Length: 338
Length: 296
Image 1 (cartoon, one colour):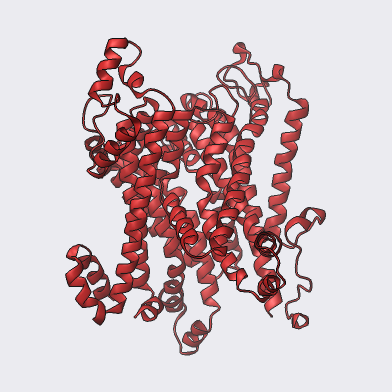
Image 2: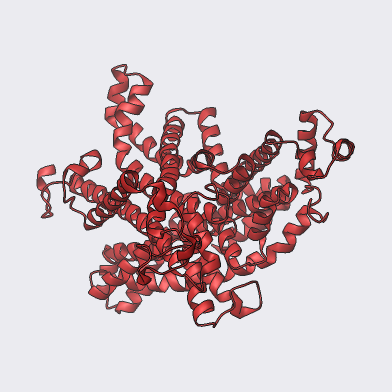
């Protein structure tokens, strides 16, 4: 199974000649390639759509030259800025120039401090990825075992109570969890720093916040799937063969339950980068989300455009990877495709 | 075949529009959810009838006081306004904005899904491509940008959210109605010469009702969270509007002195979201149980 995945990953940039030859021998590979091709077309459509929307929204809502000049700009300055940024050209021309530059990841300079917009975005990415990575790991480490435990004997009183608690947790928005955490651990107990990225201690609260609105969801799906799986015939067969309860649960039922949860987890990964915005604002986390909110508030459009563009690409990559993971972990899909 | 139901639940429980007429629906979750939402609606009515603008005015001499001090019903905020009345006045904002948005989401989502399922060829390709492209868009970011440009307020916010959030519903409706379109009753209707629109809206749409209800309940909750999040960031409802997100955002500066400023709006948000989740879950469970009862 890993071979297929490896092929798919390696062969993507390999070009048509190499893949043509392999098509006849490995149909699975062609299926995957088709999938990848479709996804790339979709990605291009998405990027086209996003950039077009951003471009025209900006033009519709005002004169960008006026925004650039600020409140002190006079007529002469406006004319200068128009010439400098090509704003005196016809609209369709500006649009094509914008698209052409967007393909090359060139969104111009930030209006706030004249650095390149895309550079600013890339600068912030690692910080965001730290937060998102920790939160995602914590999410899986908590929700998979807890979900299996809840789903293994769902009728017991303790687990019913726990399931109710998880349901209530699911209804509490992440930023409220964040505010509560600050209230308890930073204001009352003074255990944890609540501002910025100052080493591992300061990672705890933001990561918990992000994980808190993802974990209950995954947990409930896994627990429902495990409960479903525990009633299946193959579990009864395994039990008749003398398998212990923990083997039944962790090796047989959980494996099947993970299949259904993968789609959700994939969707969550793609949501993480855009969805951690509010957490970043609450904890003054110097990541991409906060950069975006500040740029939106100060109307620093090159940065916003660059950030949306980059996030869209990441979201799409995540969706594509989910598809690949699906083929890797589900033997039925592999057989069907082969 | 339906007479051989082995489960003790003899009658398949009622679904959809018949729900409010019965007090007990057969699903505990749904019952609790309906009770919670009824309370929410009552609060909405109460604020329309009883909350006057005088009650919303602040009294600076009583600012940041806890209700235990005998000031205000649920304490006061930084301008001395009673949080109880303010949170009531927030109902039309928070629920109204996400309500308008969810109606839009359900309508557009269902319509586009049905169109994609009915047509083949380029229409379907365009629908599917467009849907998956918009799904991949960072939702919150896009909403932020649009609202920063168009401006805050009730209608910009609700229309923006409604205009961006529908594709996820489309995808589900598309998959489900493709299944329904292969059923024999649809074929029969076609042979009778029933027009395309009556087949889609008269014959297929009723079969989608539980799905639409469930998704609408969950999306209502999600949009409520997003609305309050946007207001919280200062890019949602107008600054002085008593939307719950605005109240939470105000409370951040007074976490140390007046934590109740956070708990009151947070409680309102959580109660509404949990109520909606319960309804969604309950309806889903009922329709599953019903489907199982029919199959047996």
